Amino acid sequence: MVKSRLWKILAVAALLVSLLPAGVGNAAASLTEVPYTIDSSNQAGWWTPLETYGTGLEYAYMAYNAPGSTEGTHKVYIARRDGAGAWSNIPVMNGSAVAEYNDDVGHNQPSIARDGSGRFHVFASMHNDSWRYFRSDTVGGAPQNHSADMPTSASFKGTYPVLATAPNGDVYLLIRSGDDSAGYRSGRLFRWNNAASAWSQAAVVGTHAGRSFYPNDLVFDANGDLHILFEWSAFVSSALRHELSYIKYRPSNGSFYKADGSVVSVPVSLATADIVQPLALTEAYVQNGGDPGGPGVQSAKLAVDSAGSPKIVYRYREEGSTNFSIKYASFVSGSWSLQTVYDLTQTRAAIDITWTGSVPRVYYTKYSGTDRAYMAVPSGSAGWSLTSIASGKPIERLSVERNANGTDILYLVEVANRKLYYGRN
Image (cartoon, rainbow, N blue to C red; front, top):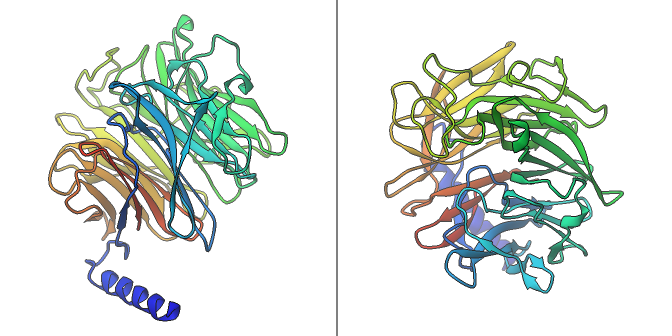
């Protein structure tokens, strides 16, 4: 019976693959609705709300905002999918109550990591706030408030926490620090030493007078090097950012590098950072809590190939355009090569990228339409093939992680109907 059922599943999968247009990476997403209602505030572009674990039996952990006790608030949970496909809902605890905070779309969303001992680490609802950090006291247990464990002064304020787990089980955190009195906001890198069960600050990654640092992503390669992606805005803040930047950190020797392998001192500034997307002729830093218009960057994510070379997707509004296009950057022959993946309609600040072993997969969402979530893969010398991954569903936000078995796991948010989807691609 089991073998017969497996044969049928494989046959259906093969049929789906055969029906795909050429060049889309032989991928067909299958979606499962997570059986828990999300809050309308569960939407961000910078976050890392998805974690996967295991080969053979695959586990997924999806941190999310659930409805709060009153409108305008949310509670923090982790939807857990076990290796058999069963779901459980793990509360993130603040003492004896589930952690609950005010809504703040684009800021007060959770990021999660699982360390080498199986403990969850969650940073939630931080918009220039003191630490809101939660960690499991037992393997796989409900995270408890451990904000007092963070190695900073009581005056520390942070925003945009993004997380990544190292091959050795350590966890790294990139976050923007609210150093407002200094006339800038810097980016700081912290390390959870899994063996010692302790946090420390690894480095101040980036600082520039009159500018604010915006974390985008952290990704480890097979050698244990940490790839770091970030962008900059005018101080104090702006929805439009500029000069998308990259550096690599090598924990084994504590050094930082540009994509060409040259060593760079930290904190980097705009004069020393490895800039992926330079300023256009009419592009300028404008201090504006909203969007001042004009060219600029808004959101970015990265992956690495088998050689440890960075592959980057980002949204960029070109000169003369009112839409944010989807761009792809790779480091080729000593310089950054930039391509346009999609620029026909407006997109949302919801993008991600994975590396299949031979080509990148770029994920993005359109602002409107019947189908909004798409995957793109290279096609031809400079073209891209586009495939809808959530037909008929008004997906507005997403996160993607390639698991240990070589499958892209999708975190898809349908804000209008307060639904979260788990996907496999």
